[in-house]
Image 1 (cartoon, helix red, strand yellow):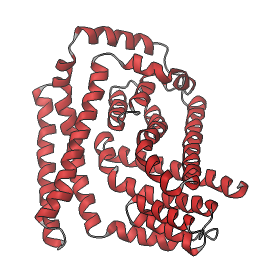
Image 2 (image 1 turned 135 degrees about the horizontal axis):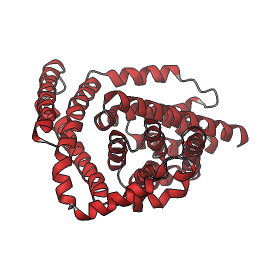
Image 3 (image 1 turned 180 degrees about the vertical axis):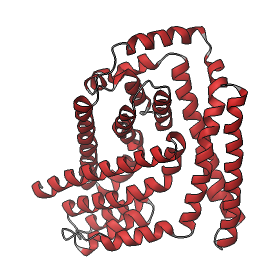
Length: 349
């Protein structure tokens, strides 16, 4: 990237930072509870941490490409992605998603921008990458939830995993039916890329591509994250949660179990599981009712949390319109599959 080409990106980043600072100043003057100290602790530090993780993910993605490791990484899930007509590059992004969602998404958008994959391939692979994302976060939640809810917790994880596997296979079959087969020269291109990569140093490629790419992403991430933070401070997400609380009616659950649903999305996520475990131990609700309540809380809470925490990242990496489409569609498919699997469990259990 030439210096002339890079300068507009840095200029736009400076403008976006200026807009973010203006939003922060206006928010602190408007919202009494958000003082400079609170904003530093709840906004500046988390935003800086997010930027660091994005930078690390971008660096990993660039190293994979610059070292010519795409073909090797893509071999891990090659049969599945070959069947889905998604190709080796999408398979490599899938493998990368097991340790970094940012790296996987960065690879996808770079492949798409370089015309190496189609928009349809990018969308499908991002949806399929919900499977490695599930396992990426599983250790954190499993050993908290199961001790609290025991059998109900195990069934809960079995249902969420089943839903994830079902929609993954739907996406794979959809790719098989509706995505044109990848060109046969893809392996030759990757072999040539690996050969050329061996002649170049990864550090040289990183210095050339990473700063501009990082600046382009932060141009959207910083103001969007700031806007989302102050929207939360103004109560936008509380209004949404209140509306969802009133909109949801579950005749299959007693009033006591419905409290688990409410806690699952009005408080920190472990609160719902803790309440479910307490009610279950006291015999107030059954295992089946506990599972239904936990799933209902998940269906209601997770999309709201995704909008609040993932929207800036998605809109930064994929650009605003595409990022919003990916996130909203991904959450729609997640909720639909989870609701379907839970309905079957409710009928059969």
